[in-house]
Image (cartoon, rainbow, N blue to C red):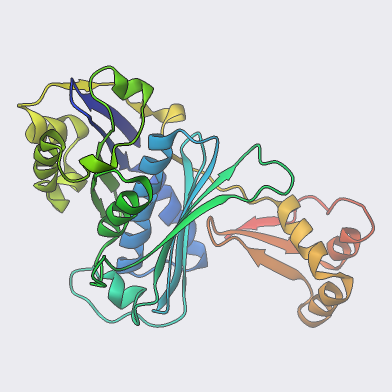
Length: 326
């Protein structure tokens, strides 16, 4: 069962979270089988993005969608994860070229996305209660460090993002295979003791200087990919922090934990088709016999035959029973 664990280091300005996506991640991959599965390096990337997105949403407790995007000029043009306040998530990628062969199932970002140094990472906060005219908040950073050195993996990109945008030290360990997508986040928070739960003003002068955070981050960095993928949460946290005073909270799992869910619907697809105009939809029906739209996130296919297409522009609801999951 997918699960999220939150914990604090008593009396220290450090917090942490550990996420393990199992059934939810496997369901996402299963949904992709009917519409074309991704190569192993892409599956690893969107698995790590899924774990990171859940960690970010849980970290800020935002009443809206957190959208994590990686895009650039490589074979992987775009990879995106969207996480809702209830920790439901969906992820996908768009490829425009062939990936080079690899024996490990892993390729660095400069090979997949950031071939000519133009790649970017964007994090968007889209509130549910957005006011008319209000635009979502978005932060964008390049896929390279302060000295223009390429950042090879997602964890390094997000650590750099948190340092640049939030002025907070962050250590992130991510891993994914076809069974598990997992992540460990350790972050310095700006106040100590009971202030951990209440928050407080940022202290930019403390970046990189807090000895407690540095010690705990070094312990977290010893976590190996295989350990993160194969060990349960209790074992991981005990092995890493057995000498620390860790206060753990009840894990979020089941209905309250991370779950795969897609927000696509026949109604949303119908609205999109209406926006194209009747003439274009009629041309598609005349040429292909029907309009078929597939969701990139979940593999759901929506079919609109000639009658359905006509009803799009007459105010009647689309005929029931036209959805087909492939």
